[in-house]
Length: 142
Image (cartoon, rainbow, N blue to C red; front, side):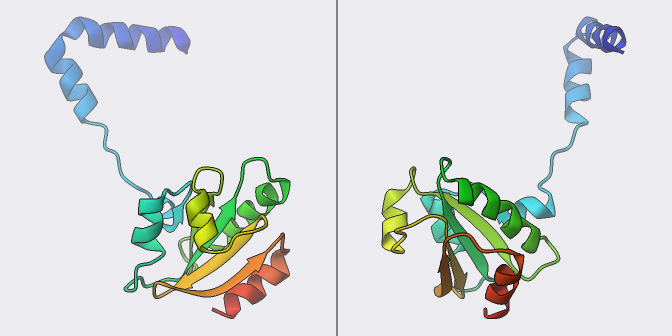
């Protein structure tokens, strides 16, 4: 298998620049729906553009986390499972170590903290780890 791949690369290289350009141009890239519904490791610009967007059709959960926070590592996958493309919610994660001013603006004093935004405004918030049932209740209140 590896030998066959190497032969293919050599064949493309020997074919000249016009073939390489054609071969590379045939690959198309696109954003999946999940990538648009999950804004992972968002920066301040992405936060402002999406969470504070008053015309957004779906509420967005902003998960303030840190890489060293063990409860954050468990909570984020639970939140991802509740914010799939067919759900009525989007998910954004913000690293508080990278964006402490943003965390301070929303009074994040403990981790994890999840803030729900709807129509560009804070609608609800919880601090600390929550289980599956608590997350469902939280989403129903939005």
